[in-house]
Image 1: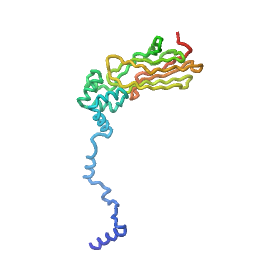
Image 2: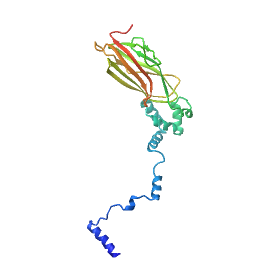
Image 3: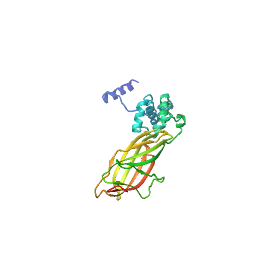
Image 4: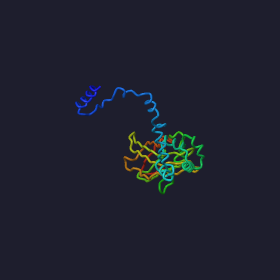
Length: 248
C-alpha cells in the first residue's frame, strides 16, 4: 500500500506537481440517473416559442406604445401574431377589441387571415379632374390604362377596406419598364390597419413625371399591395403613356 502511494507521489513530482486532468473512463459513460436528470432539464416549450411569449408578455401594459408602433411600422409577423392572439390578459384583450373595431375577440382569434379590398384608384393632379382608374377583377387592364403629361406633378390616391382581422405592414410597390428595361422601382409602407366599417383613404407622396424626347412614349408597369408576410392583395399589370399633353 505504501509503495502505491509513493509511486503516485513520484508520478505527480515528475509532472511538476500538477495532478492529471485526463478524464477517467467512467466519465465517458452516463449513468441512468444522469440520463434522467438531463432529460428533466430545459424548458417545456421551444426556445422560439418562449421568446415570442416573452415579447408579447413584455408588451402587456404598454398598449398605447404598442398601438402606435404597430400602426406605424407593422411590427407583428405571422408567428408573433399567433402568440399575440393566444395571450390571455385583460389589458391586452381590451387593446385587441380596440384594434378590431368592436369585433368579438374570441371570434377573431379563430380567423387566420385578414382581407384587404382595394376599392378605388385615382390619379390626382392640381387644377384638373381626377383620373379615375377602373380596377378589373383580373388585375390586368386591357389596352392603355392612362396617359400623363410630361413634367407634371401628380399623386396616386386609393381607398381600401380591411375585413376579418388586423393587417400588419401593408405596403405599396410599383415597378416601371420602358422597352423591357426597368426605369423605376418604388416601395412605400402604408402601415397597419384594423377592420372598420368605413374605408381607409390614402394619398401617396407627390411625384413628377419625366420630360423630354426620351421620356415620352409607352411604359409597362406592375403595382402590388402586400403585407409584411408578402401576401399580395392586389396585383396590377398595365401600360401607360407619357406625352406632351394630357389625353382629351
